[in-house]
Image (tube, rainbow, N blue to C red; front, side, top):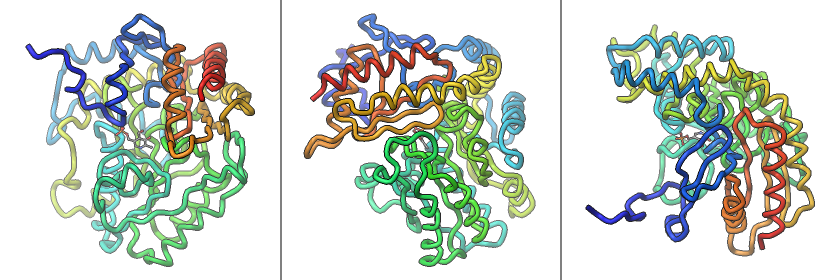
Length: 436
Ligand SMILES: Cc1ncc(COP(=O)(O)O)c(C=O)c1O
């Protein structure tokens, strides 16, 4: 027997060297709380990694997954199928935007993004527009960690170590302007015209070479950057004008984060594809997917040259346990009216977060839906160090926050209540006062 050695697990997106000196171990969870290995309750202010939207161990999801594992542990979805994954697709189609009725399933958000990019390319080719191969992302975008996702993504560290990435990718400018839009609530006032950056891409590359544009409706992982008013509508209009597909990466925004099923619904903009994951199963079993517009699916059905229309899929596409978790999550969201709770608490969480204006280190605060972000002044030559200290001190005080650079992000499970929101920001204020 080898000794219990923390070095054997190579942790993702983590300072392994630091964590392993002073680990933060989670051993169980229930509702809004984790329990640490020392028996301490830790409030989950981030729904895990923006995924546990129904709260931990929701009975509907636990029951659905338990039943599934006892009934059908695995079934392939290549040339065979199981009824629940069709039922899940039917239910999602009812709740997604009107013309978006086809669902391709993956195991993660990263795979959802790579699948959407591949569907875009395959679609353009099968409909006779094979020169449309270029993919456009946005600076400060996060689209997971596959090669497609980091190529269209716009986060330096996620790109700089990994070579030349996909060819034929370009980026429009990000919309973040804290000077013009300080301490914002909801969509920001200034910057709608930044959508016109797509015209610059068209002028540079020509529309005949561009397959798709992918953006998060609001950028999450780079620090909660709500879109300017009218920006997404303008981007939609430009994509229509130039016959370019618009993909919304809704891995964090779908399933109630803005109080609606999708951000597309919230912002009243219908994209051509929507990538999903996280809240799809409330994080209980890994699952992602691509929601696809009728035109694209139908074109592939009509024009693909082989009996198999799309040469793409995963061993675990539509896995029975993930499917059961997703069906359970949809029940939980509906029965407990969680999207409504999220919508009802939008102003409350905004007020609670914005009350920290003027606290030590705070340079900006942003909120949208059931999300808030607090940006801190970075230490000289040590970007991210202050927020990391806040993360550690918050854990010591019983609160889990998420950090991105020197930005703290709050995205609690959708069943959070007002007292819990108060507590979240009280602890944060205390921590900010104590941290250098
Ligand atoms: C917008 C967006 N896309 C894609 C992903 C990647 O998802 P996953 O970590 O499940 O691969 C994330 C994860 O945070 C995300 O926020």
